[in-house]
Length: 433
Image (tube, rainbow, N blue to C red; front, side, top):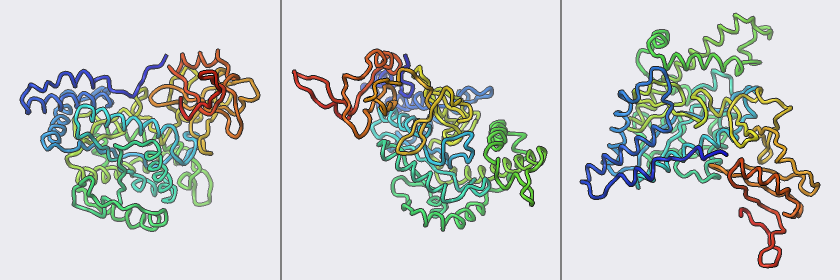
């Protein structure tokens, strides 16, 4: 039976440890320490040269303590969610799906866990970096905008109130100013406004002076950057497949060695743009807790986020798809790894949303149950939705299969069925019972 994976198990213990009888300064220290433990439980600290407990932890605690002393909302910043990989061998489509949903919920849970300990709470700023890499990877600005807009709509739909999206354009328009949440100017943009302004915003971004940056030397000196570089080269094998970058002037596919050279060049170009992006984040969020989806030794200021609680750091939603296994667990991986013989694609709102391992307990034989759908709940549980457009009796539901589903998901909720007798009468099962 699965257990909730995205919960803080520290909260109640830490709250009890923060005694109100202590002096204010001591209580602040206790709260800061408790918050550090919560945040560290969301980090990837398994690297062979990890320095979190050597120096990163102290750096993090100092940042947290600064917010507490000022009685201010704790701010975290995460550069992420650029766009979906263009490779259909890796992802289900160009828009966010269950993989993004799970990560966003995890980030929300992090902030809620902090709020449990500190009443001012926390906010996590996601700075979308699509414009940083889109031109290099030949991804259109329109696709970047649509992905980002769908993310914002998903956050509203899920009521994730602790997540705030920031565009690079917002930071460039307020250059040399610190990001002051929530007064910072970040007007909404239409798709046409975004597409028309993207070239000038990209130009302004690329013209930022970050001082001397020798990519070859950085690759020699920084193990984290080297790991990111290797990760880039690995995923670019799929992302650049079929693009003009992999063809000669006559439209013919490049040789294997030529493709490797292109991938190496693109990967280094991405690292250089990434350095500019990092510099922009550092200058506009100097006091925020800086999270990263890339590997770092966690000495500070950047801290490597464990993107999924059950995965490694290199797997991100925009390069993978989420798969629900028939035992109730979840995994993340490239779409190509999930065989059609044993898996199916589940759709939400007309678009592919996740991969699910075929499960006999979700195949209900009665004809009236054809079209029944199943949705995993957060952080655990399963919701069963009656077929749309017709009346479906709860009495037709196979109780033996439902019992097995309860064993996998801990509880099962039903929506849209009728036939449950209450006090001798038949009543409709509501949206969630």
